[in-house]
Length: 104
Image (cartoon, rainbow, N blue to C red; front, top):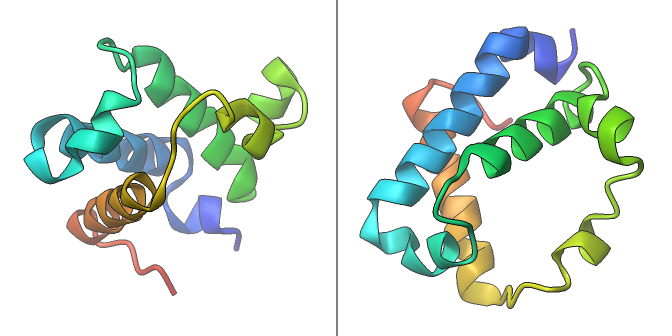
C-alpha cells in the first residue's frame, strides 16, 4: 500500500492539504509562512495537492502539468529561512495530527 492509499487517496490527500492551509491561514504562529503566500490560497492548495499526490505514490498530477517539480528552483524567489521552514513543518505536523495521520 502506498502512502497515498494509506491516506485515503485523493480525498485524504485533499483533506490534509486543506487542513494545512486552514491552519496556516488561521494560526498566528504561522504568520511568517502565511506571508509568503498569495491572499487567495486556491492555487497554493491545488499545487500542494497535485505535488503530494505524486510524491505519496498516487497520480503524478503536478508533473503532468508542470514537469519535474524542481522544488529548490521553484522556491528561490521566496525568502525561506529557518522560521518559515519550521513553521511549515509544524503546520503540516499539526494538520496530520488533527486528521489522525501517523508520520511514521
